Every structure is written in C-alpha cells, then in structure tokens.
Length: 172
Image 1 (cartoon, one colour):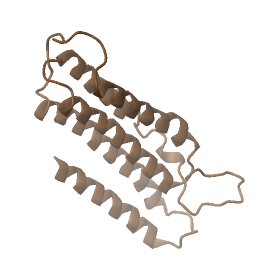
Image 2 (cartoon, rainbow, N blue to C red):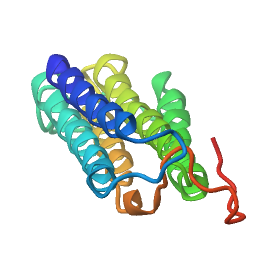
Image 3 (cartoon, one colour):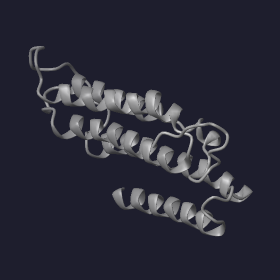
Image 4 (cartoon, one colour):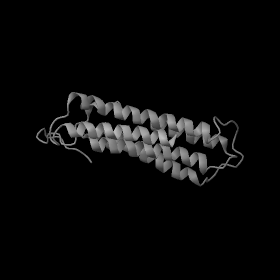
C-alpha cells in the first residue's frame, strides 16, 4: 500500500514538473497544465482517504465492536490525536483558503492529509487493543479529517509565478 501511495505521488509530481517545463516560470499555465493540477489534488486526496480505510481494515482489525475495558480518564495518545487533528483542521480552514499559488497549496494539502493519516496510525498502534470504541472513534475522526481536504478549491490556484500586479497576496 505504501508503494502505491509513493507511486501515485511520483506520478503527480511528474505531471507538475512536466507542466512546469513547458513554459517560462512567470508564464501563465497552459490549458492542459491548468487542467492537470486539480487532477493531481483529486488523485492525492482519493489515495490518502482510501489508505486510511485500508489501514483500519488491514492493520487495525476492521470495524471493531464492543466497549472499552478501561475506565474513562486520561488516555495517553488521545491528546496527541486531538492536536494532530486540530492541526489538520487549521490547515484546511485557515491556511488553504488564503493560499493562491499552486506550490504552497499542494504543500498545504500534503501536510494536512499527512496529519490526518498520522491520527489513524496513532489510533492503530498506540491505543491498547482493549479499547475498541476509542479506536473506532479515532478512525472515524481521522477519516473525517481527511475527507475535509476534498479538493473543491483546486480550480482557483494559480501557478507559482502568477501576476503580482493584480494586488493579490499569496501565503506560502
């Protein structure tokens, strides 16, 4: 599965490089390159969302049933999971809407999806096996965190050398 994700990322990176080589750095993107960039984000998003589900079914034991055997209270990995998910949500709703250029947008999406994926790994590997309800809550939260990165915002990104004369600023 990891090899598949790396392969998809390499193909997406090659598509971006190929579209970048066609024109000068400050030239507007060609129509084909402008259409390829949203496709790269959609492929990346679909790969990570499906990977989170596959991780749960292959590594986490599928859909777990039952209640937690331990009493409620402080559970070590849960604060880490909450911080990671809060970071992913902040990237999606605070950073991505302000990004106007393609490269910072791609970086923000990759970082946010990686944080969502990290929460799933925390749930699989750090939570004890006798806490199935908590493991499933972390899985659903990680899946929802990744789904929020659905690239409906992909069309508005400009290439990294877009016009600065329009008065728009780019975060990156």
